[in-house]
Amino acid sequence: MPFRQRIKSTTYGFATLAELLAKASPARAGDRLAGIAAESAEENVAAKMALADLPLRDILAEPLVPYETDEVTRLILDTHDTAAFQAIASLTVGELRELLLEPASDSAALARLAPAITPEIAAAVSKLMRNQDLILAARKCRVVTRFRNTIGLAGTMAVRLQPNHPTDDPAGILAAIADGLMYGAGDAVIGINPATDSIARTDSLLRLLDDLIVRFAIPTQACVLSHVTTTLALMEKGAPVDLVFQSIGGTEGVNRSFGVSLAMLAEAQEAARALKRDTLGDNVMYFESGQGSALSANAHHGIDQQTCEARAYAVARAFSPLLVNTVVGFIGPEYLYDGKEILRAALEDHFCGKLMGLPMGVDVCYTNHAEADQDDMDAILAVLAAAGVTYIMGVPGADDVMLGYQSTSFHDALFVREAFSLKRAPEFEEWLREMDITDEAGHLLPPRSDHRLIANATTQRG
Image 1: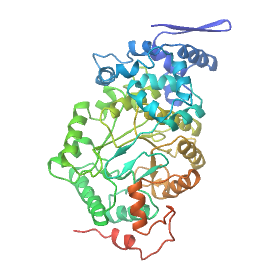
Image 2: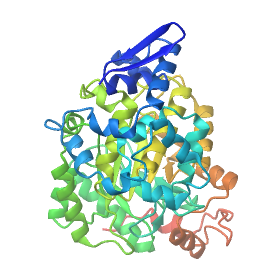
Image 3: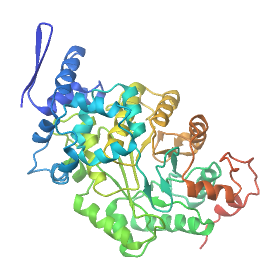
Image 4: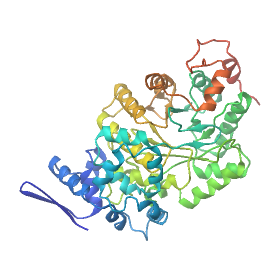
């Protein structure tokens, strides 16, 4: 349907909902590259005004990608909770924004609302929000998941311990893990991006992690971030798989470019749950995404990159994941040009994921050719902590030597926890105290070179 908005003597027209959403988006490189961004600040404001007056029902009535040709669209519409939607069915996008920011809309109210929120609704309302609005609304969303520990409780923030190595050398990986554990990182997951996605390599890394977790009774979960087909094959062979990982996108075409389908993800979830390796819950899936993936795969259908990203969260939500994160600055400046664009994208992604009921983390990161630096990452990390981010990455020295990008370090996690009085997952906190890594208050004890974790964790058992 066409949309029109008059500002002074100029009337702006937007032919479709996709065009309206794109023109209402804050400026970013990917939308400019795709040729769908607003051509002026005035056109952007006109689009926002028209979007604010748009009834939520109209968003449901105009799928951005045809139902007949896209399984993500079918998933979004077929699983939409129409009963929950009745609470907001009469609202416009602007009125939804006001509802989300009301003090009465607390964590319980937003949890009840989550099944009613489609990704297009989440994206639409985010485009009307200032950064502070995204922080405040996301902070009120509480999503709790469990595998071997409890993630997402109020007053907590978890850390993925990311011990990547350019040659997958076991000694180097174990040293990085020991380093991270001694800094109190690893409650979200100990997750390795393998340098080589092969069945044999993934199997050896899984057994390396499993041996460590069992040997020290660490209340956490392991994941080797191989393709889902690799993980499926290994589960059939009896490999010790805790979490199934997969990168996902917001259209069928993006997921096809990743070599994945919804049926494949469902098969993997069923197989992982059948292993019964959990102790507290059956959230066995781990998903990553990031703005720009749909455009880079030429599968965006003229939709702005932030709305495409929100559609990926519908895929994630269908599989009750333990963890979801946006690798926000990883794809590069062609999609998010500088620190300001990365900051905005991080807040949008985190807000949309949380609003839709996901345990949302953010890889606060940038590539070396982006107009960003570690000061930008410090600022982004701080505002995400204020927004209640579920987890962040812990990379030795913040420099991933295998993937070749800059992220956040074990020290950065200590800063956030100290500045915002945040705890780790409670089971992991208890383990750290029992291991004499932290004191009763959760602060790190003075390092000791003879600590049993350092002495024994770096030794690989045969």
